[in-house]
Length: 237
Image (cartoon, rainbow, N blue to C red; front, side, top):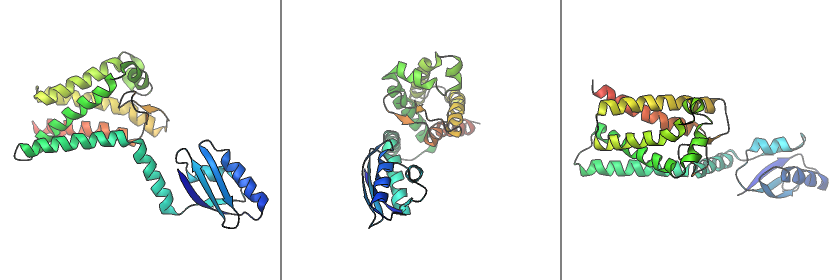
């Protein structure tokens, strides 16, 4: 990707050379074109780099800036690119379960959530089974149970598969939702610790297939399952 930024403080050819050299030293930057006449720098990079990183690389006499909407658009595009697999999976599960409800001739929230959770656990367990060892090795990096017992990383995909099947066939809803609530509540603890501590580690939600960073979207996934299972449990009272 290539973006053009405004740079102030350049007064001569030497300034152009210094700015270009400094920016090229940043990891991920592949090409830089600097113009003191236009007071701009056109930067080509392998992936989006934050404006603050560019400013830190430059001498204090130079100030780099970009139009706010351009910076925000670049960050949004980068976020969508990273989490595209998860967003597509959620879109597919949501679309299919809504279609099932439509074919039933009426929309029932409890029934829809039951189908959604079945799809969620079946799909997410599938990706973990593609490389069970890789998932277990990633999961042990942040899950509080897997840290104490490494075998939990190998058991967890089977637990997700079992929950998916249970939701699909309607097996003992009370037990199924209670187990879901407990498993996901424990799972979210390690996720929240990693996100709040800003640890840059890989999220194992889709196994070892996609290189997804741990973020608030992982918390949302777990919280969604906790919330749905809690709602269905309360509905049984």
